[in-house]
Image 1 (cartoon, rainbow, N blue to C red):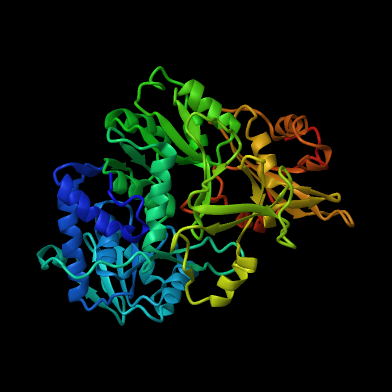
Image 2 (tube, rainbow, N blue to C red; image 1 turned 180 degrees about the vertical axis):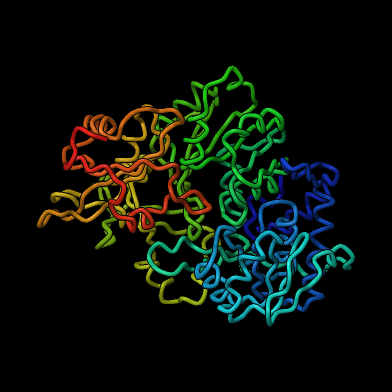
Length: 533
C-alpha cells in the first residue's frame, strides 16, 4: 500500500509508481486479456523513458498532448509518461468522430497527439477542421501523416534516455477529460494530480482493498472510472489489475475465473448484459468478493448476490468534475441508492435548485458538492472560466443531478434534473420509470424519455426504447400493460420501441438526446393501437 495515502502533499500517481517500483519491482501490476503484462519495475522504467521521449520532442511542463488510444499497456505508458514530465494528457474518447473529435482537439489546444493506428483514418477525415494539431505519433503499425502535420516514430521512446526531472505537484493539472456535452459543446475538465489520486483513495477505503485482491477492469481508460477509480486504485494499493480493452458479457465470467479477480466495477448497462446471459452451473465459480455498480438497481443487486454469489454489491455517485463524494459500504446493502457521503473528503447537501437552500431529509433536490482536501476537485473548465463560475454558485458545485438524502447521509440519485419529464402537470423521473420497467422479465435495457404531446397543453408524452433478451417473445403491447401495473397513472408510457441496442457514449451513458431526435418513428403507439404490438 502506498505510504502517502493520508498525506495529500504526496498525491501524485507517477510518484506512487516510483515507490511501488522500489518496494515491489518484480510484482505484476497489469496484465491484459490479450496476453500483455508489465510489473511495477518495468512499467516505471518505461514511464521514465516515455517522459524522456516527450521531453526530447520539446513537450513542456503544463503543455497539452492529446491521447487517442485504446486501453492497454501503451496507453498507461503514455498517460503516466506525460504525467511524470508534468505535461497534461488530454484523454479522448475512442468513439469520437467528426465534429465531436475536431472540437475536443481544437478546444484543448494540443499541438501533438498520440493516436492508435486503428484510429488514424478517422482522424484523417477531420484534418481540414483541425486548427492546432501539428505533430502526430501513430502508435502501432500503419498510419500516415496528416496534411500539414509531421509524423513521428512511435518506437523512438524505447531508445530514449529516462527522464529524471522534478515530479509534478499535487496542484498541477494531470489531465483533461471532456464531459458528455449534453447541454452544448463538451467541456474540458481540468484534473489536478491530487484529484486523480483521490478517486483511487476512495476506492481503497470503500472496498477495503487488501494485498490479495485483484481488480478486473473492463471500462475504458479514457474515463475516470476505469482509469482512476480502478487502475489508479490498484497502483495505490500495490495490487494486480486485469485489463480487457472492451467489455464483453460473454467473456465476463471466464475472465473472472481465469484471472482470479476479486473486485470489479460495472455500469448499469454492462451489469444488465451480464445478467441477461443464460444461467450456468459456472455462475458461482469465481473469486469475486465485491462489485461496484452504478447505478445499483435492486434487481441487479439481487441477481449478483443470489445468482453469482457476490458477497458485496454496492454503488457510488460522482462526476469527472467532483470526484466520488458518495460511496457504498461493505456489509450494508443499499439497493437503488448511491451510498453514503464520504465525509472525510467531501461536503454534500441536497438543495432547492432555484434557491440553493438545503431541503429536509428525504425531500427531492439538487445534489451539491464541495471538497474538504486541497485540489481534490477539478480546477475548472478548460478555457471556460464563466462556466466554472456558473457551476460554483454560492460556493457549492452544482451537479445538475436530482436526489434525496436521509438523515444519516444515505443518498439516492433520482435523475438528471433536465431529464425529468413533464406530463399532465406531473414531473416524471426517467430513472424511476427505467428502474420499474427494467425489472420486467425479458427486458435487458430500457430508456425512458419525453416526446412532444399532440394534445394541447399536454406538455410531454412518455416513450420507452427497449432491448429484449434473445428469444424473448413478449409484444410491446404486453410490456406496456405490465408497465402500467408498476407505474402511477401519469407515468404510463404511450410509445414503445423495440431496439437491438440503445445508443450510448463509450462510457455507457444512454444518449437520450439521440433517441429524442428520432421522434416516434417505428414506435408502437398505444393510443392508436391499444391491442396490437
